[in-house]
Length: 364
Picture 1 (cartoon, rainbow, N blue to C red):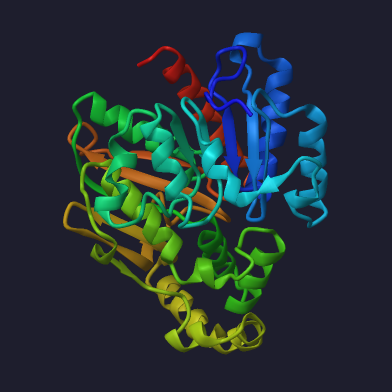
Picture 2 (cartoon, rainbow, N blue to C red; picture 1 turned 30 degrees about the vertical axis):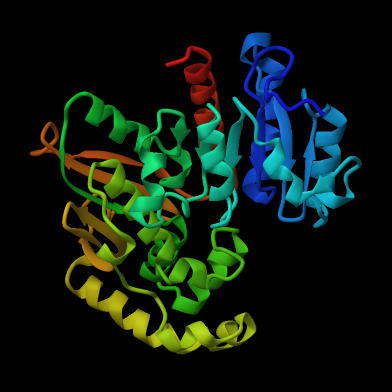
């Protein structure tokens, strides 16, 4: 096997980590993009990996191999079942000079692949928030390296990170950031506002594919806290995870339950959240799960928002981020739109791959 990390046409090979819903959506988008793109702009997929195996080619994976991989994963299988698959342990040797590693997993273990890629003049595109939300001493390289992109970590496909970076490059400075950063929790809050019980709203979010397989991953607020940390660090505030105050939407005792037990017990919280929703309505406000961030720290949790405010007027899984800066002080800058779903997330990742490919090709 050749090991110089360069495909025959001189492009940076893309290696995709993660073949869940976002990974599969991304592969479909890349294949569609390549059908329409001119030859110099096409994206070369040299490798794909799931938690069991890696499929790799020195030059480029064939259409057939990609189709076989998609078929296997859609059926609930593993890449181990694809012809030519190698053990996952082999992937380290495949991360070679000039490669672009695209991490759409939710794993903390990918850093051992991401950092070597940067040290070998490669690039990194992240939908995985965990490397960016680790201790600052470990995460700092991902915020300072010119060959890292992570648009899809906050707001899925919304241009949140690129807007923030553009403002900073123009000399702007931030005073605060506020937002609804979870499509899942936004949907639950808006459903409760419409009269649904907490358990009903949660079940609906699960049925629509908004929530994680274990919805406590959403309800504990940890994902929103990671997004708040990413925004803070991108704004120039190197906060630590302990600087984020997080309110979960279930009591601590529910963390020890099995998933089935949790699902059986979730209805016991209906009255509490109906009361909180009603209290907000009595005050002429709406209940939203909000992140509030400044240079001193961040608070993530339920907040009563004015009905006619940007956050109060959100519906369903919409996200909104409000930047208050030196340039945008009297009237803050707002970005809003769909903030959940594998397709919009994959679209954000694809945009980063295209942007980074050009950036690396031009040697900027």
